[in-house]
Length: 340
Length: 279
Ligand SMILES: Cc1cc2nc3c(=O)[nH]c(=O)nc-3n(C[C@H](O)[C@H](O)[C@H](O)COP(=O)(O)OP(=O)(O)OC[C@H]3O[C@@H](n4cnc5c(N)ncnc54)[C@H](O)[C@@H]3O)c2cc1C
Ligand code: SF4
Ligand code: SF4
Ligand code: FES
Image (cartoon, rainbow over all chains, first blue to last red; front, side, top):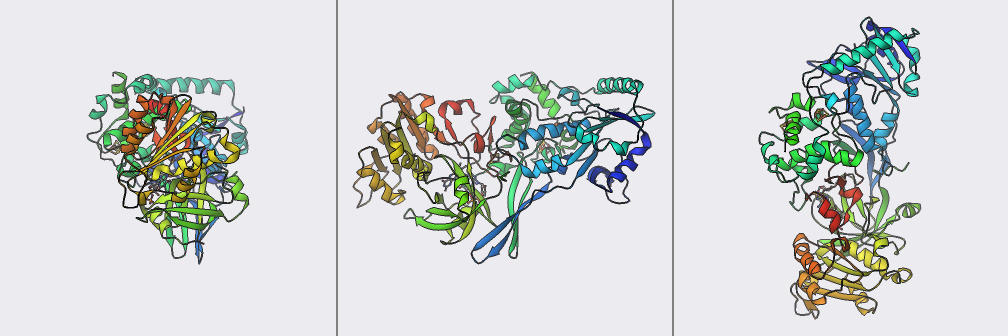
């Protein structure tokens, strides 16, 4: 597909111009963090960022989302379906690991039998523009161990790579190509391509954190009852930060909220790290302690998801590693499992 | 595309209080839009999400059989928020049901075999659906002998009392109803379900056992069937897990590489052996 060159400082202008027509999600500085937010008029996107504090999954799977509305009548509640409408959107400048996470989430939300319209409509109406990591942002990045690369178009409709003098813009899908007019008319030459490949190889080299993520699957198959699981959870506070930050965690709760005679049914993020997650009305809880919950998180990412969808449910973004208040490190857990 | 999170509107057509303690009731729903009944075509063993706006949803097994047209029934024990709100409802109230959800009793696998049904307590509901399905005249010849062993703590706690009487009169079903302890008027069998299973001693020849009940009953009943020579492939049960979405998305009922809501709730013991024991 087409490739073009743009000036490095043109990115913000392009994003703002797109925002005239589309809902543009871009990295915006908020206090000390960078977050993906709808780009407001006069707001400056920040493309010199490392990675966003939160995963951008909220673009397709908001933290809280209305599923339907209802009204009280004398005979009971009468409901109205929330229409699955999503504005034409652009997700501008996500890191390749996060774009990879969308491919993983698609497998769950967009299955043959049950389709999750809330996720799917937003996903279909959004063009994903990835911004390659020419320099891996954090020491805890380990995308190359989990089928990713710092310069990768996986999950992206357009990939932008800083090649020094200019940025190389690659249109990966026809959806991406539809936005080509925003990127000027300077065609990229073979030299730009070569430069990009060189940068990509270097960036890949620069990822020093490596974990045996693929090797542990057969070990997990056999070690559900290994005493090893007793050794990792002791410090865990069950705060759920790791799952909240994680681009691939997708568990949610469904709840009702009523005000006067009107109500809504909402879904909101939930976490397998919470004791109540599996607790039944009878009091029975299949996962009695944080040990079982930590095992669930590790198993789900490195075994169950592989069994179900043939891919690991971790993109190596390192968010859980950096955010855990008691420094529990999934990389160490994977490392230790590989030695069982 | 039908949004699987949106319930079908139904009206509570009939409420039957099943037990003396009054905390188990059968709710019969009729669809507000008659065409929805077609869309809700179900198989015994499946479940639905009963949806009460402002309260939430509960997964409940379908207690009626698809051979009963015009309505769908669920038998519900009063437990927490949603089930209590349901118990307080009156006939004529509007609410919602989602589904049908989950796999089902494996009808094709059961066809041509002798069927042994073992139920304890109020987990009898989807077994009742299966029994009524098999006894339906167009279906009866597809199945071999039908043996039912059903127990409750006392006579007042037996569900579907009228139906039990009807089934008892038939010659094409071997019905064994038992209570842990009878009362002054009880003339039937006394004894725990596992003991009665031992006495009835159903043959393993060309037979499948379908077993549902409280964990303690299951624990003592399984060895009886192993002793009788039933293989794990030929013992089938239904699991319960906390659920929300019912369609394999919210992650709540994930056990090993399965979602109980979508891949279950019905599993053979052989299948359960392959699952992590986290239910
Ligand atoms: C496949 C299946 C079939 C079932 N069939 C029946 C039946 O035929 N009759 C019956 O009385 N009960 C049945 N149950 C159990 C029933 O779902 C729970 O008792 C009920 O959800 C409790 O909800 P509540 O709102 O009253 O309680 P609360 O404690 O207020 O529950 C809050 C929420 O937690 C979830 N939840 C809590 N306990 C359970 C549980 N044991 N199973 C699933 N979700 C739970 C529900 O989403 C519920 O809305 C079944 C459960 C499953 C999974
Ligand atoms: S962030 Fe750390 S402490 Fe919090 S739930 Fe996750 S592992 Fe436990
Ligand atoms: S498990 Fe941790 S490193 Fe892996 S994708 Fe989730 S937050 Fe990122
Ligand atoms: S109930 Fe949501 S995944 Fe099973």
